[in-house]
Image (cartoon, rainbow, N blue to C red):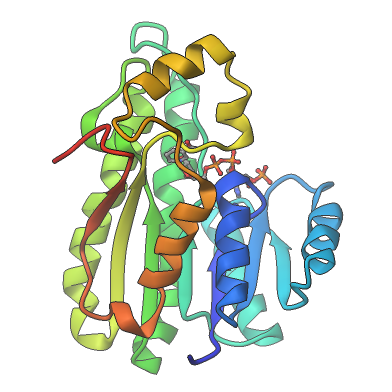
Length: 246
Ligand SMILES: NC(=O)c1ccc[n+]([C@@H]2O[C@H](COP(=O)([O-])OP(=O)(O)OC[C@H]3O[C@@H](n4cnc5c(N)ncnc54)[C@H](OP(=O)(O)O)[C@@H]3O)[C@@H](O)[C@H]2O)c1
């Protein structure tokens, strides 16, 4: 295994934390972003308590292109060139289209989709130059099937995979792969906070009969980021317990 530098956006969240741990366990130097300061010290202390001493964090709003460029430059100077990028930061602002505001639309498109451009742009040249790169975009089942109340989120998440397919073709010969993972319902704090009766209804729609685990998404990120996954590019891999089959 070659030790590499991995950047995970939104890596202090439910799925992001599992991704950071998996990439660190694989021996990589891991960097994550946070947008709201305050929790980074506690999160880093938790990681160190678990024995992850080569995890670092940088404050960056992924909706801000200049901030992403500046952070990528700082990481390259402080630590080295990034060769694994996991575009994981995301938000929802759910409302039926009738009630959806322009602000809800903009916030979701900027955080889930513009962020993929903002973060990929400043790191891609170094990947091409090195002849190795892995970009993994964390989309959603709702980008594949659509979801009532999520025109903004479904559009952003579907857009992420359009980006994946187009960029994958442009960089395939350069040793850089670009893939999408589309998780179904994962047992993160946000999903576990949903009332028990609502959660049971969700689980009833999942053929495997349970929610997914953040570690399961992270394991696939780990594989897609490895040397072994060089022949997988432009893919959209569903991890949804059979809830939506394409
Ligand atoms: N949980 C699920 O069931 C599920 C299912 C399908 C897809 N997904 C996708 O998986 C990804 C991770 O979801 P999660 O459940 O782990 O969510 P989460 O716990 O809410 O984490 C989201 C992360 O995104 C970061 N973030 C949000 N806005 C940002 C911004 N402007 N700049 C930088 N970072 C920002 C947050 O950091 P701050 O708090 O510091 O802003 C947070 O760490 C998302 O893209 C989500 O759409 C989740």
